[in-house]
Every structure is written in structure tokens, then in C-alpha cells.
Length: 231
Image (cartoon, helix red, strand yellow):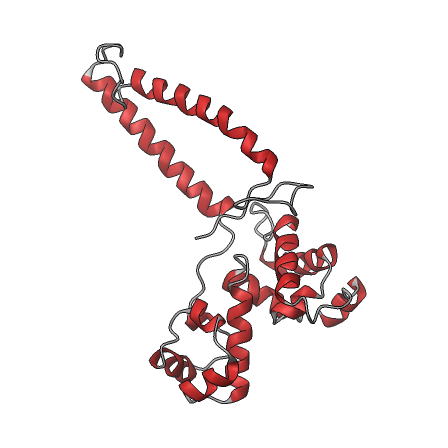
């Protein structure tokens, strides 16, 4: 997986995916970890660094602490699945324009990984896998899009519904216009509880990465009206 760290107004200067100001939070995080460690020691869930400094607890109290910790971990993991994780690792079978036979040809040619497919040149792929040049182009375009900054298969499918099928077509979008178009495309899927994904910060990161990939071909962003027409 890949963690994408977003902070309003601080998206364009980062070190290891984090704005420089974010590193100032590490000393406070260390204090939080120290406090949490001592809390766990008092609950009997951690071993004190100095023997005899933890208050004695009954066997039943220790079991209750372990149960509470397990419930908290399960709840945190479920929350991550619902609200934090935006996309998952793409699979070759997720490619919308490839038939089962073409997928099998790619796998037998050594392209079972979408990330390896994204790095391939379309002409070489067509020759090695024995597929049509148009199929090779579609496959590599799709692979490069889904592997760009955590877009993934589901988001790529939604992008395709509004006419964005390649990295360079993504580079021509405006963040606000694209997010509005994605929100409109996803409106029928909403259950009233889950937030619409991607969030605006994710869209900004996608477009910035696409523009870096297509710097030699990127010209002028298309307008919101053009997006609406494509949709």
C-alpha cells in the first residue's frame, strides 16, 4: 500500500510525503507514545521498564484490559477500511477493455503485475504478448493511470465515465472541475453515510503527478464546461 499525506495549502513542498512543518509534530508524538506506554503498563498490557513500578492487577482485570484492547484494534481496522483507505492494489483482471483471452496472453508473457505493465512500451508489449497494437496501447494507458498516486481500479473506472482514460488526459484537467465531475458521476452510489471519494486533496495530487508525467505534452487545462461536455 501507499500512504498519501495531504495537508491543506501545503501540498506542493514535501519530504517523504510529508510537508516539512509536519516533522515538528514528531516530538509531541514521542510524548504521546510515552504516555500511552505508561497507560498500558498500568493496565497490565505492557511490561514496565523498571520491575515493580506497575500496580498489581487481578487476573480478571488483566483479561478485561486485553479484551478492551482487542475491541479497539478491530474497530480501528474497520474504520480504516471504511474511511481511510481510498483504493486497493489494481489487478490485471480489472482492466475494463481487455478480454479474458488478452489478459491470459499478457500473463503468459510475464505481465501479470499491473506495475510491470505500466512500465512497458506498447510496441514491445504487442510484439512480446502477441496482442494487437491497439490492445497494447489500451493496456499500458490503463496500467499507468491506475498505478498513478494510488488511483486504483475503482477510481480509474469512474474517471473513464467522464472521459479521462489516460495519464495525460488527467493532466489537462483542473482540480475543481474534475472533482465536481467525479462527485456527479458517483452521486448514484452514495449511501448517505460514506464520504464521496476521492476528496479534493486526492484529486489535486493526482493531477499534479499526471502533469509531471506528461510535462512535455501538457498545454492548457480544459475548462469545467469541457469536462461537462465529455461527461
